[in-house]
Length: 302
Image (cartoon, rainbow, N blue to C red; front, side, top):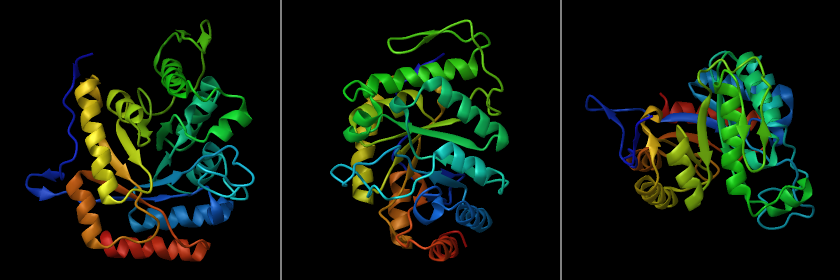
């Protein structure tokens, strides 16, 4: 496969001289009030009707109790498993993309996860976006019995194993942490060769991983100035690692800090090259979240 070191980043997107409209998604379809199944469906349907292109899950299998740095949430925060939550949402929506934002890949058995996500892509008729990252919460790794220090290498190897199972006619893999041959798993994902890959994270290894392997990069809770610094990191990564031409340009998706954004802020993100804002409601009740979705659409999707 031909590779390149040049990746388009950090430029406002235009087609035939017309500025492309910002896309919007909704974060947290499996957390907080939206961990209630019926509430998640109502919010997802509202987002779909409003013109949002995607809903996104968060993930932590366990959280420190009591909450301690760098934990992002109290241990009592309800958080459904991403595949289960998105499978339920899939059954009650028809067009909106279903994104894991993100799955902590080194904590998962890659063959089990490949089966779960292929199944989700099948039941959703090809709407899965697979967002993943290496993770950062050391207490969670310790509780799960997964080594923390090699999480980056494990993340990369697990993705290789999953893609082998999804993409190969006769899957076989021999890595440092996982090996298999003489096996197969069907059905394959509907999307071929596999669902869209999106890498999360704000570190140099995450930037290199996104440039080398993914269709997109995802930054969480980042103001425009922080996004600009991440883009600098992505540009450095693009000068260091090869990227398959088949991946195309790296799409930039960002969750702004919680709450609404005004038109000037959206324009700042757009000028940086961000093509999608995945909105994080500051409000916590289902009705308020749905109003947040409709207000965002009225303000920015017209």
